[in-house]
Amino acid sequence: MPFLGVSGMQYSGASLAGSRILLVEDSNLFTAMIRARLKELLDIDVEICRNFEELQLAYDKSSEPIKLAISNMNLPGAEKGEALAYLVDLSIPTIAFTGTFLEGMRDELIARDVVDYILKDNVFAVDMLAESICRFLTNHRHHVLIVDDSATARALLSSRLKRYNFRVSVAESGAKALQILKASPDIGLMVTDYNMPDMDGFELTRRIRATTGSHELRIIGVSSSNNRLLSARFLKAGGNDFILRPFIDEEFYCRVNQNLDTLLQIQTARKVEETA
Image 1 (cartoon, helix red, strand yellow):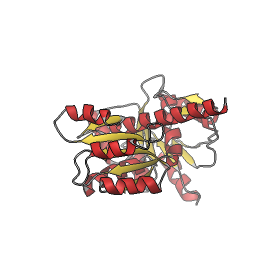
Image 2 (cartoon, helix red, strand yellow; image 1 turned 45 degrees about the horizontal axis):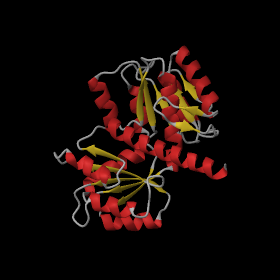
Image 3 (tube, one colour; image 1 turned 90 degrees about the vertical axis):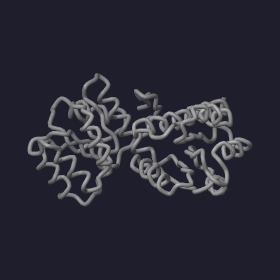
Image 4 (cartoon, rainbow, N blue to C red; image 1 turned 180 degrees about the horizontal axis):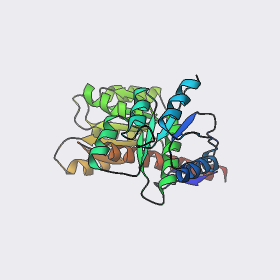
């Protein structure tokens, strides 16, 4: 069914059935709520594992790949997070579903490269989980371009986006970015550094905006500069958003989601106008 997510995501309601998804959770209440909500919103049937042994059996018994796992931090037989570690070690994309949030735990989850973590401590927890699952299963529809002259920065941003299941292209210069954009018109978001040798982020943005509007491509600028006016200059050049380094994963992913949500809303509205 169509739904509006807690963070603003609009989903058409098309079925996402067909992917093997594990729900690793021992609470009868949460398993019932999650199973019902995912079936209602996304037409997804989850495979439930209530303890560590069932999780291991679920992995061993079938050759069908696991697309995504949702895992509690503490399970019978895995009271110290062994279930989450097991899933991560198997390179299975995992969303942690936990009732505890401590700074050290958050850092551990990020270090393990989990897709997301959802806290059980609010009434929207199950809906937030459903939205996170929906994003992961549909992010492959989005093509993102990373532009940065630093190989390290390109690799870092690319790995973050690929963790969330986005399709990613990278460019080491503004000139290369223009070539990629011309060859790949399906790119909907560009994340570009400001300080680059051949063409800075402002000039790249201005050149793109001469032919491509915000209804076709969203642009996020990033910089490690202490100059707070950079954001104003970038936005005036045609950018849609700006983030100062260093930024945390949650902030980056939120900005990416917001811009892609806005792009989808604009494109949907334009299609409605064209058919009216």
